[in-house]
Length: 364
Image (cartoon, rainbow, N blue to C red; front, side, top):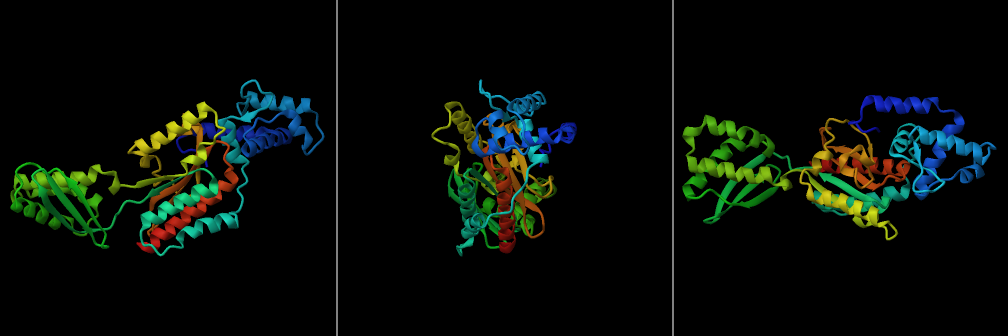
């Protein structure tokens, strides 16, 4: 579950450190991390001695914790005598010691309940799934909705005013989308018909992304058949689709309030606000979740392992989902503090991704 952008030697080094730990060091490390994930509080040596598997002194455990700190796996926040895991320590725990539990029935039922509606609106269902996911995990959820990739059946331009026109896109599956845009000056009814006829001759049977990639070549090849005015209308009309993120994957974010605990320190609040500002402002945020080259399965990003979360100190547990052709078309995930209950969140995200994939496949 390591971040694919991480150097291979870093992963090897962590595996080697874990392998070379003796049983006592490993148990101390595991207990510190598990306690931190459960409470968020630093863990002291005296706390560990009370329920340790063997009878050892607080001084012995303190020495082990100092060794783990020297290795970069634990750190002391403020002047506290207790320790918390570093990002590197959390990564090593997640990769080598994390025990992933089974999906709890109550969690499964809460997510399944979102499909109780007979609505055919995939966007609405994904929105409800995002809300259920944030409710179940008490984190913020991300759902990357797939773009509409059905073949195009018909394109039409409609003049609304001198400086406004409508481009209407009809897909083979009956889905209809339309956008208002500013056409080049001097358009006439005949140039609009000519532009639409040209596009329909080129477009039928192609998806929008396929049409955009071949449009320039066809205009060059058939320059004699389309006058300059119609050509400009084609280019400006299609640019509306290219530049509008609604035709691309839509990012649904739910559960922002879950990360804004009233007791959260002001500095942490500012970091969380910064994260959500990024999520809402960056039009290319969906690219962060493009997992097409990463294969199946749940992946975990911890803190600064990804630049999006470097300031907020948050973690992301994310899994891609696939359509009926086993092509990755989107992703679902949960954002939370680095002390997420990873063992519980991983099966929830995995199950939700499979559910969304089946939903998309059934409706395609």
